[in-house]
Length: 113
Image (cartoon, rainbow, N blue to C red; front, side):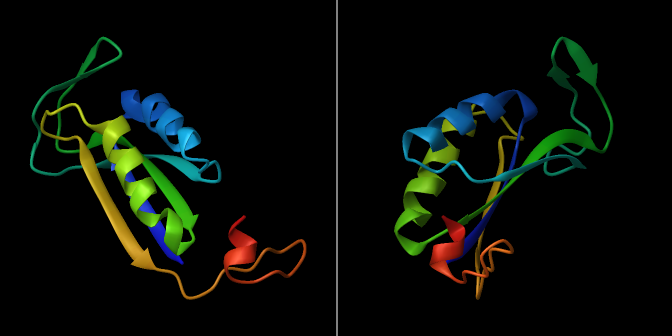
C-alpha cells in the first residue's frame, strides 16, 4: 500500500479528478493549502486575479492506493495537472504500513476500497 500526496495548481483539480476517475481511483481527500516552490513569489493568475507573494494557493490531494494502482495514479495526476509551466506541483509516494476502516475494522488493502 502507498500513500500518494500531490500538490497541484487549483485550476487543474477538475482535470486531475477526471483522470483519476478514468482509472477508478475515486477515494481521496482534497485540501486547499498555501505553499511555495521554485516560483519564489512569481506572479500567478488564478481565476482572473493576480497573486503575488511568497505563498501561493495550491490544492493538496491525499490518496491511499494498493500497489497495483500506484503507477496509474501517478500517471493520471501528472496527466491532469501538467501545464508545462513552473509551479505545476509535486507528487510524493510514501509507504503506508496499515489502514483501518473505522466502521468495519477492516485493515490493509481491504480498508482502502
